[in-house]
Image 1 (tube, rainbow, N blue to C red):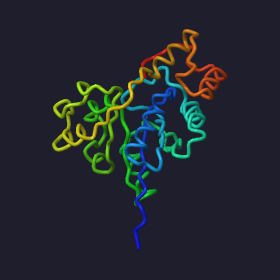
Image 2: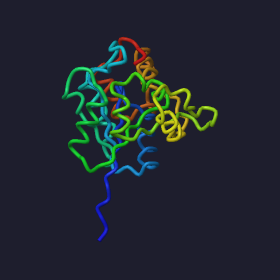
Image 3: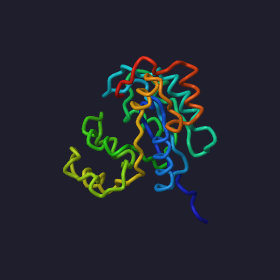
Image 4: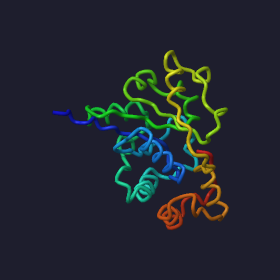
Length: 213
């Protein structure tokens, strides 16, 4: 008798201020490449390493995520960090998720730029033991691949993380660009799901400026 297959769950954290098509395509690539059964999108309450200026409320960001993920059974918005309150530390989130599903294998999804900031994360070496990190790039050029010496962590993590890098689609879209376009009265159609575009307009979000969160 064959054993039960281990569930493979992706954790995709961020401000999602707002969620855009780049986030969705990265999650789709991760689900395909890593054979994930689910991807949890986890909007932070308060990011510990970023300015909070221009940050839409946690409730707005969660609602936009929920709208963006409708219709894809692999994707789910989680309010775990919002409910916890205060600054959001990934180590706490991963511990809580593992406690709730101890038999699952967790993958933490990040953009390649975050590889070079991991040394700033709380309890990063413990975190690396609790879940597998998967870094995704924005282009297909080998010259953009991260090198171990660029990752400021103790061995063997720089080599492991660089080896696990996945080249992604080149998508030149960012949340800061979307906020800037909204502030300037420009269209954001095709940069975000239509439901998110409507939500931003109905709630008057990002009209005060486009900060670089």
